[in-house]
Length: 422
Ligand SMILES: Nc1ncnc2c1ncn2[C@@H]1O[C@H](COP(=O)(O)OP(=O)(O)OP(=O)(O)O)[C@@H](O)[C@H]1O
Ligand SMILES: [Mg+2]
Ligand SMILES: [Zn+2]
Image 1 (cartoon, rainbow, N blue to C red):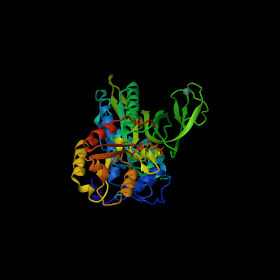
Image 2 (cartoon, protein in one colour):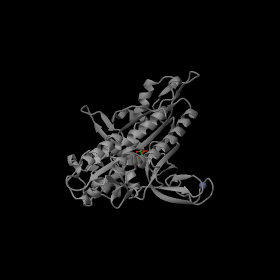
Image 3 (spheres, helix red, strand yellow):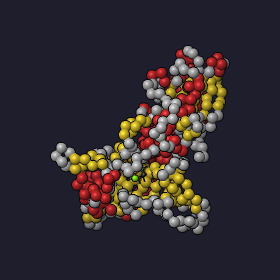
Image 4 (cartoon, rainbow, N blue to C red):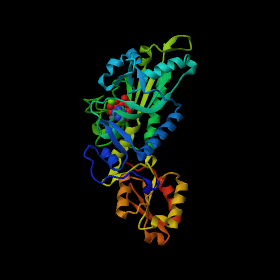
């Protein structure tokens, strides 16, 4: 991408509407714009990052035996009447009527729709287990939408649902999903923790949340200072010591980015959806459900990794892996610079943001820091004349000068460096 052809500009003044750093930086870096409370448009750089997040999630869900589907956002009320959630969900459910006055909701979650669908598709234990998932826009009329896309009223979620023939099989999938989530957050480059959780409106009796540590988090995690026990404070409000080993606990704020529930028969019994087990009995499916806040992750990553200059994207989810900053008049058209651009683009196709604007170097540095590209290839006249270029690593501020011909292989090595301890 050439910056001269990019209509989206950074903002240098502080946006007044933003209460947390990720929201402020997302507005300033040109990632999102607000349409209404809790409703945002995603601009091109945000979409690039979102697609990377989604693809990591897809790869890991497929590896775990998941199959992608896409369910309707528009859901008739009768399914929700069957489970009692048409009432229980309350004002958080966006409700509307069609031209015949038939009531519908915009899906905040899809247990009803998927259970109804699977009951039509699966008749026998031989067809189980089944692990459909989707990546889709969800609607929740949150009481307090805030912090930009961290708590939106329209947001993107990955939701998966498991259907198993026995409780044992269902618990195996639950454990597999816990491991899958750990891999996903590791690959996304986020410092996270799995904690015991309350199961809330979705229900069931076993549930864990995945938390990204961040000062602005709305949740509080208490964790044992000795063993691996950790819990959402909602689940263990009075814990002064660890229930497993008796050691003292400490607390930290965090952002919930994922949630897994063991549901058992909760939905399948209410919706009377059964299959034939091995002995020929009609029994309800054993279910689980597994959510990840795809759009929330993008903001949580920024909460976790930023500095006074701007965003510090983890390499796996950065909108572009590297910027190239030719400095000085005419530099962007120099043959050496164009040759380097071509060779970095053949290493990383469609991953280079080429700042070919005729603006002061200070503006290019400021914008590249604000947008948080993991690497900046800085091409000043003096270096280029000697056949050199400079790489700046955004996370550490470290700079390396290298011959232009070696810049691509150096970038490739730097990008493979292990994730830093957060
Ligand atoms: N309003 C929202 N905006 C953005 N992401 C959300 C929102 N609500 C939930 N999510 C994301 O979707 C995931 C799965 O949804 P789930 O129903 O488990 O959330 P939740 O328990 O209601 O979350 P919270 O406690 O933050 O309201 C959550 O872990 C979170 O990452
Ligand atoms: Mg909620
Ligand atoms: Zn302990």
